[in-house]
Length: 534
Image 1 (cartoon, rainbow, N blue to C red):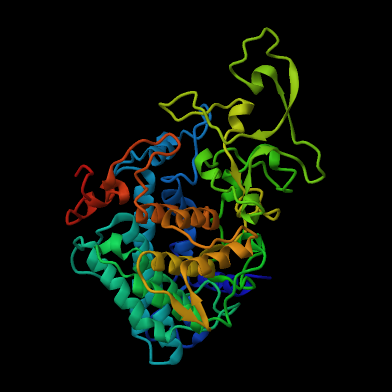
Image 2 (image 1 turned 90 degrees about the vertical axis):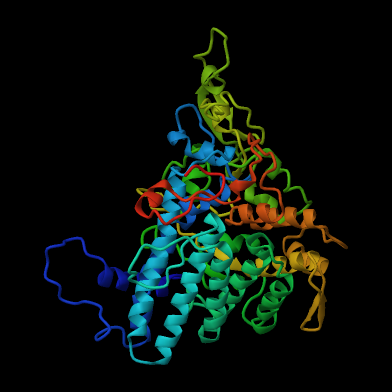
């Protein structure tokens, strides 16, 4: 029931915007003269922008943001998960302008921008109305969100504001993209909805615009060389003061990421709705578990053994009684009834290095996820595909496995929270630590420890009397693991060049990715980012 409102829109969009048989007569066409005319039709017309966002957010975009950090890794397991080295290159920080994610995420981001531009052009030609004003504000906010992602990933990018351009666009400086995003959001937020819940779920609201501005300002020193921490706090307070009756920290942390999450989660400010059949794109259970966990989580398919996290990141989950510790699976694994999860194998199948004459002897192995992930091949970042190799690496169940997953596609229905109240609070705490003044909200003087303790108290973690920036980064690791912010955080804290896992590369130019060669060949006006070959 949680997503009916947005799925009804998706179905309407599919009927209006898709066509698989190209030789049929056109019976209807969206033009300024006939569409849209009311709130429902304006909302329906915006569908392509959200469909595009959903398509790669939890796949290639997420992998670009997380596989390039200490948070997630897809090692090779013999011949499995090599895939041309794309995962290894992300981890080692040795990607090139031809990397598949470099190309696909560029196409994804500018595909979303182009869709927004087309819809904005259509709306601008429609008669004046309150619905038109709100819809235009929503589309400009979504375009700003796409531009934020593209600026964060690629740095200097073209600014394209029109649906039709007369000539190929040139590269704009990052500071100019930053200024465009900021000005767009500040201009449109007064026209955005202030409601939360079913009617606005998955669409930008005034509070989402403030959260995006807060994220923009928090990273301003890195993006444009100009700190904007006071502005960061101001955006946080716009939410904490203005929406205190709308948003609150969810008492049950795991509810935020559960298969049945949705508008009822009071912490989520902006989410991407997913569904196993109607709104596909969430593949966490498919890639991030183990075949032996199928029964425990009642999955209608065999999950793969691909993705895990490394020991150093896992060890950050060390606070006593912290609920977030339960989002990671390490050590021996058990079924829900307490019985051990057993794998039928042989002595040689368990450990490929076994040299005994009885290697073919059948045994059962109690599945055990080990934080240590020694390689059998550095060249391919291979941990082996014997049973011990398959179990190397801690697994995440933060986006809890969905028993209603489509068995054919293996997509699950957990919505993805992009902005939530906990991040608003934590960004404010960080800005204060970086020099902004503490402010009073609802009679409470909110220092950095006071704010961080709100997050800690919710998950039963020990509270603190003081906190440093490094400690706050670790707290962000625990709170926002696998939510797509780790790369952004590590760069802001100057730790993206640190060694982790098997990575030793310290090249600072890799804080942004290269412009894809495929795009440069189409548009010679695009300038390649420093450090990458032209």
